[in-house]
Amino acid sequence: MRLSTDELECGEACIEDHSSVAHTGYKAKNALRGFRCWYVPFLKSRYYGNQFRPLLSYLYTEFKCNVNCYYCYTWDNKLKGMTLETAKKSIDFLKSVGCRVVAIMGGEPLLRKNFILDVIRYGADNGFFMYLPTNGILLDRDFIDSAGEAQVAAINLALDVIEEKKGLPKAYKRVEPQFKYLVKQKEKYGYIVFFNINITTENLDDVKLLTEIAHDHNIGTDYHINEMPVIDMEHYRFKDKGLWITEDYYRKTEDVIDWLIEKNRLGYPMVNSIEHLRAMKNFIRHRNIPWKCRAGHNSLVIRMDGTLAPCFELYATEKDWGRIFEHKFNARDLELQKQECNKKCLSTCNYQVHHYYNSYTAGLQWVYKHFHRGFFHRERRRAEGGRRQRGATP
Image 1 (cartoon, rainbow, N blue to C red):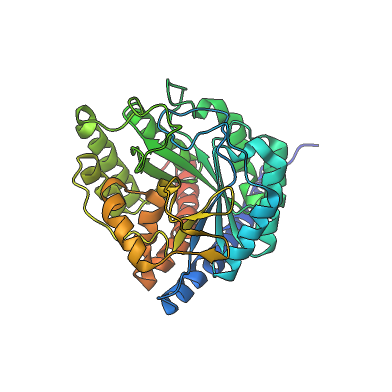
Image 2: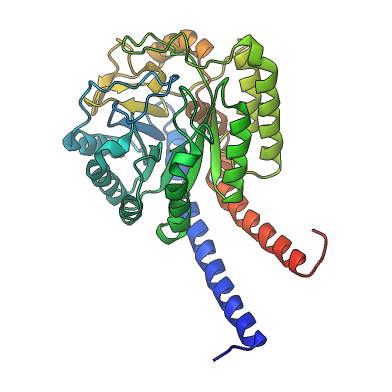
């Protein structure tokens, strides 16, 4: 039996309406989750301004990794990963101090998939925004579906290049099938997808290509300027070839950053504020303007043994910052520490906390910007498609 043109158009309209409802529900769910896990804790941290109220936590479950990027100074395949007991107690501790966001860090977290799924479930069951960074190489359909069912809130795919290069193994072509399935399933399970891109001397053209791939798939991006370790890491072997931005690459790197700023203005969903992107240009020329880092106040690291540090740049610090349920963060020690490390650091995550923390409206913008940009991006593409079908010029 053949369907008439009218019947086909009706069927397509029904499918489109269903897709639109599903998409709107997906965005609304993430806006609500962002409000509950990000904005409400932010309001409480402003109210209890003198108390330790972390908004964002990094749970280091692993230093081992299945690749070895030249710029990565956390890689260490000799260390044993975090236990499930420590992970659960860490989440209990974070809940007790008002935090509702956990980023599961590595190494490569997916070296222990069942462990990570247990951590995601435990965090989600306790009302946390569970954030999973991964290089994607070990991703497969079963894990993506399992993570979705466990209520993972965001999956950040760390990619630096299109095709693998020396010292830069996190390549889009290695994970393209996994990535496309990840994007396909995001509205079913309600998680957000981002690309995490580290800007080095060897991937400046790739940064633009990855940005456009993310935009074509209606997902966000975040960017880091490749930084040398703030403190010495004894196990790190690539200090002399870590792909740091040197003088020969200043101008080209600035051109890429200017391109990113323009895309940000055009509505490409980026974690980075324009202020942070501009600060990168000063940073690479060693004209770093001091910024009020809130690490240890509103963000922290939980090491694999349950001890604490203000941020991942200071993971290896010898200073005792305490452990879960017994933190030793105080304003004086943090201020003294940051007089030194602030000169060498432009942490994307902590800079965003600094940027959005001091304004209630900026805090709301942080929660809603991806919701609004994502929704209107879809509507624009649908409208442009309709104009093309009618033979009109967009």
